[in-house]
Length: 137
View 1: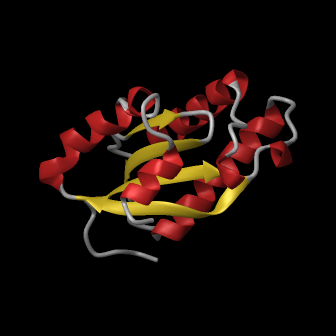
View 2: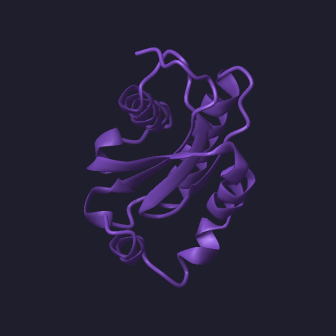
């Protein structure tokens, strides 16, 4: 689905099923590499991400030819492919069927990038469940 404006920045949050800490350090590295390659494959991208043991955040400019749902599906499929390539059974990492997404205005873009890049610090003090509850999700 093509959208009419090319600068729609989207903050996505994917969590593991039941918020289980099932992303170990090896999987973190694989997911980071995959997300970095995904961002680099999209022209004129400067997105960012943070991968934690039970979820990850990603900030990306929504490609013109994708809806948010299509983007989310591509990201999850990319992670499954990368895990498979590295010898992991992708089914060992189950994602929650829901994900969180919100748009980010251009004037908040640098603040949102900084927020995402500091998620590992934030989640030492507050869990994802607590954060989502605070946000009313």
